[in-house]
Amino acid sequence: MWFSDLPRARRLHGTVLLVLLLVLCAPAFAQSASIVVVTAADGPLAELDRSTTEQLYLGRRGSLFQGQGVLLVDLPSGPVRDEFYLRLTRKNPSQIRAYWSRLVFTGRAQPPREAASTEEARRIVLQTPGAVAYLPRAEAEDPALRILFSLD
Image 1: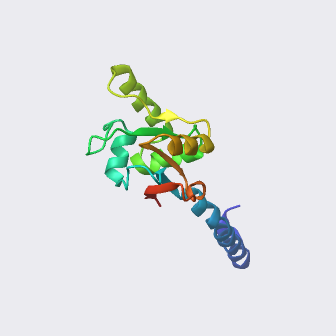
Image 2: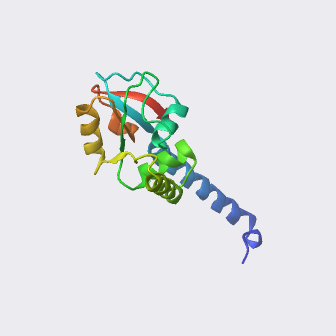
Image 3: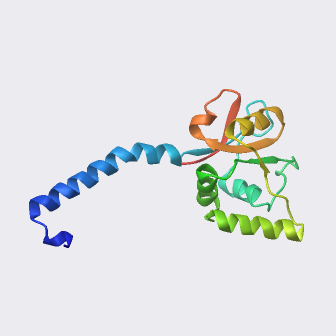
């Protein structure tokens, strides 16, 4: 039976339920979509723009304009990492893996250091001058961290 075959009142009821479900789920989607790039608040970096962040996380640049080296930290494989790369580079997880495999094989760059968890990524950023990581915004609400760039 097709949706158009249902009585009008029943179709309206189904549409209202669908809209209600989407409205109830919207905060969950919004919460997962907010990812920020951070460094230590007392570190030398003040901010990053989208282009520089993308160049850094794609291995096209290993230092900033002042010649300052940057230690990049990746989160473990999962939804936050996938969302970060997709939103920043427009590449899905398999494309990112293939991209980094090619760079490593040719010797042109090394991938970011992979942390075991968001807690470890925060620890590395706080203990290493010039370290940069991406975190869910909720995990970055700490006076010891400085937000350099936001993927909203």
